[in-house]
Every structure is written in C-alpha cells, then in structure tokens.
Image (cartoon, rainbow over all chains, first blue to last red; front, side, top):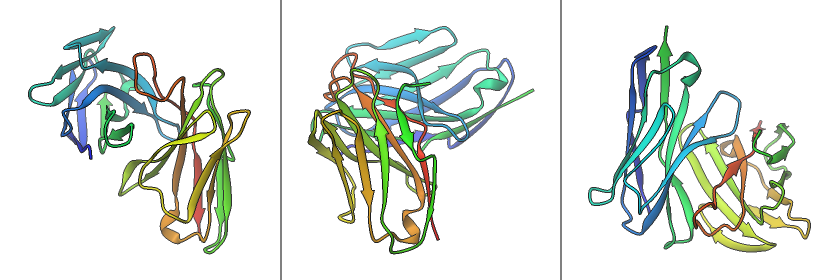
Length: 113
Length: 116
C-alpha cells in the first residue's frame, strides 16, 4: 500500500520567514495530494491540494509543488504569521489499494515573534 | 467550520466497555470516512462508507464496526475497549468518495476517547 513520509517533524521559523514542508510517497498510482492544517483541539482543515496533472498550485501565501517523477510534493508558506503555527499533514490518495487517503506523520510548525 | 458534526466531543469510559461515536456529514456529501489519531500512530484511516454501503477498509480492528444510515449519518462502534484505544476519532465527508476532482474530504472536530 501507499506510504507517505513527511519532513521535518518540527519546524521553527521567525515571523515573516518562509516555511517548507516536504513529503514523499511510494505509490505511483497516487493522483491527489491534499495538505491539512490542524490547530490544537480541532480537526484537520484542508488548506490546499494538488492533482497529479498539475505541477504547482498557489493560494495567497501558500503554495504546493508536485514532482511526479521523484514522487515528492512540498508545501511552501511565505511571510509566515503567528496564526500559521499548527500541525501540518500531507496526504496522498491512490485509487488502487482501497481508495483511501494515507497521511504523513505531521509537522509541528512554530512561528516565533 | 467544516460542516461536519461529531458527537460527543469527549468520552471517558472503562476497559471492556462499548461506545458509539456519531457523525453527520456535510449537506450533500454521500461519503463518510472514519480516522483514528493517536500520538504514536498519526492519522490512520479506518473505514469509508458511501451512500450506506462500505466502500473501503483500512486498519480497523475487528472490535470496531461502523455503519451509515439512510439519512447519511454514520456511527462508529467500539467494543471491548482497551487502554490503547484512547485516541481522537475523526469523521470526514466528501461528495462522492472516489478521489475525483472536487471530491475533497472535510473533517469534523473529532471525539476524544479516553479509556481508563
């Protein structure tokens, strides 16, 4: 089945700096890659996603890139703000092996003032 | 607010007991997913229902079962509870459950289960 690895597990940046979180996946059949943000005591919230027919997608300060050949995708947050502090999860959806989302282990992002 | 509701928010019970967690999907969504989130296992997919029928199964224990009702709400039943079942249980919903474009999963706020 699909295996998703996520790095780093913790990331501390200064306010205004950029943050990058990277994920790799194993199943070449995966074709949908969402990113979720989870704040303390809340459920994961979708922040951006990308399909396998697109190499990059941007939404204001957030962007995601996908390299299908290398099987990795990344989340880029620019001009970080304290409210960006949360746990971020990447995920990969593969239609084979049961039609399910496999999540990475999460990255705790801390934006310091 | 994702539009997915879950009850109860917190649940404390003893080992060996049985509990039921409830989820109402977003209006119009036909598919419901259950996930378990524990500190050492991350977010693990348990099971998916689509329009009342089981569609996909993940790492769900035999002591756990789920169903989706005609009004599309879903229940996750956990029985013979063990200490290790303590976790956050999330429900998510999506329009079709097939991973096609626009078939995004939206998560509820979760139920925190504590087994003593």
